Amino acid sequence: MSEALLRLVQTEMPYGKYKGTPIADLPGNYLNWFAREGFPPGELGRLLALMQEIDSNGLRHLLAPLRGRGGPLR
Image (cartoon, rainbow, N blue to C red; front, side, top):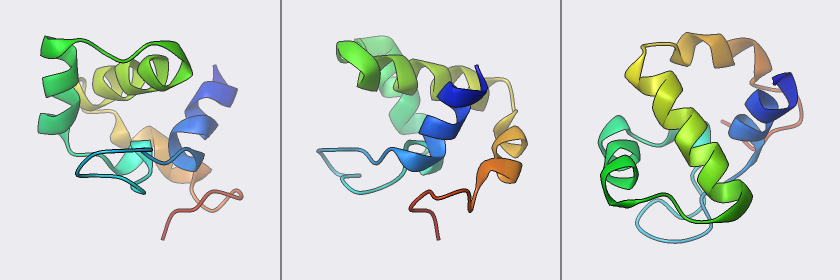
């Protein structure tokens, strides 16, 4: 599971309004939209679903220790 959490801070959204934004930094309303409309297939969808679950449970702070471990975050 820790690998998946690390991927949240390292993987950028590949398209759309938030293209280039790390998945860990996507706003909750955008993640909730995907939850309603359907997540894309593959790893991207799995990461978005995981981030939506983290966000909806108020657990974003758990990603703080992973920032700066080679990820593109500012």
